[in-house]
Length: 135
Image (cartoon, rainbow, N blue to C red):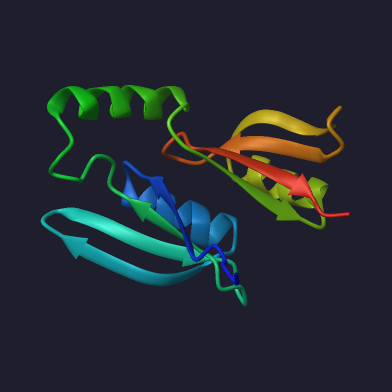
């Protein structure tokens, strides 16, 4: 089987803040920016790589109940709703850039007991982004 990851989805609650973070801070290219009914879906990804992240309005699905929307909003505010792991050759440089840009730091670069060196920050919507050091 030849299966790859094409898109990953992360919610956003402020499309402009998310766009600035992923484009201007992380250096991702914008691949699509679609508005519909007052909402925006923004597709970004690392330059030269096929994998994309779709930043989407949370709970836009009409099947989500009001109670579920409330829970999603609360979890996003706490930073416990969504997460993604990225990787960088220069972990310290990436961390310094994120910290200088005002990203909420969850964990500074550290060697983990399970064999990776990583750090963690939150994007403007509260999504947890772990960044592993490529070795």
